[in-house]
Image (cartoon, rainbow, N blue to C red; front, side, top):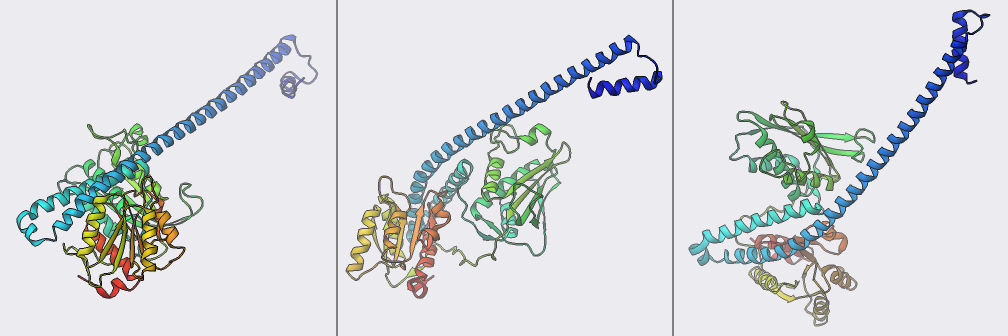
Length: 453
């Protein structure tokens, strides 16, 4: 007799009296209740097992789909990186030659408008290439301390012209600088503000707020404990239903028809690549709010030299010798021409082996190079990383610049740890190159005294 059966029997005796005999019908009832309960328990255990099995299968399926998507994105990223590298090489040829032509006063007097149009179109093509890389592989961010206040204002103002929406900015006092890749963050902010502005009806406003937030170990599992800068973007649009809310960062989903969800998918990719987090709150009729958490920088924002808007680059009158290595002959030619316009003497080679050889021969001849500019990747040959590693075995002082169209390569994100003093991303124009050369040459004393604007 089970404990449950005994309890039921005791309750029946309390009802009939302690000395009363239990009628056969009661015994039959007790056994029926016991059997029914055991059957219920058996079915409950089966249901629990079935639920556990279903949860396990769903989890395994989710893991398989996530792994499949990761492999797909990895393959897409590799493809996008290769295409972007070749495309950026071509854009470097276009933009560098155009900027070189723009240094000619006669050319500017006759076809200056055409040259500016070419430069502007190539710049937009460069931005599109970077967006492709960012989405496909979320290129390794080149992170520096950045004040988000000006960055947010500039990004918002660049996408609002032509829109009926306007922004209200609410920035807390004493904001920490964020540790971000400026170019990637501009892309993310522009996409986010554009989405909110398009969702906001005429006469209503988009609210953008920035605050400091210290995150502990418990509140947000997606974030490491530490200091963060929180960005909030809220619109007064129609809001999103539950289905749209769960798919908002899906690149194949868009709230606009026709359209795609690439913009918000890119925002998500950029934020995650920065070790941050993003969440969205919305419901029909109540608008949509995005919240982004970005890690605060440990140091204050840098004081980089201001970008020169002049079409005339800095001039280095001392004729310092520069060794340039790139696998594209046209890039070598135009880079040498740009350096010559800066007052520098360029020696060009097409691979890392020739670069190491030329560097050693120059030292032995007593005419060492004052600066190295190495392409990171040389198909079928020694690239810049391997070449600078060999050179650093005998010379740890010569300044070196790494150049690449592979913006997602970790060497570009952390060039100082790989033996370089500066980096320049392809495509570049004359002022980009001049400022980078100035920074690198200043380390050896050449650029610090001779550069003139």
